[in-house]
Image (cartoon, rainbow, N blue to C red):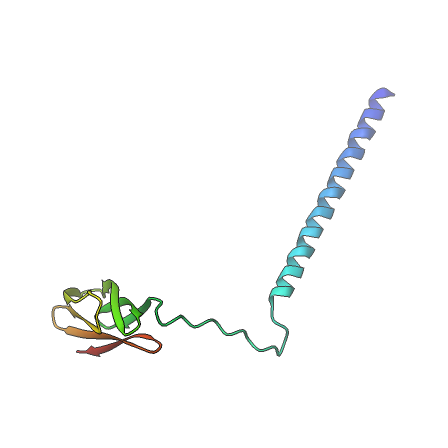
Length: 129
């Protein structure tokens, strides 16, 4: 008789543990659904615009010869990083802060000259070649 009570007790414990696990999983799923619903904008609601970078924040300027990361401090431009495109290398680069900065990328058959200047909304690249 004692053995039968233990079996019943163990079965009751297993059923309770399984029920509690099912409740916890359901609560987790319901909570996830509520978070996803709250994160989605309502139908017809205007999309929240992404913030535009400040003019002095570094920006990536993409050119055929490579990428230039530059930032502005007022009217002074500062080139922070240069990354030649595949097949190109840097021939010359003026990275000192100033009213403009010049970079020249070159490949076997092509030369790309870039002048970086600051405008009201940040750095801009004038590309030749």
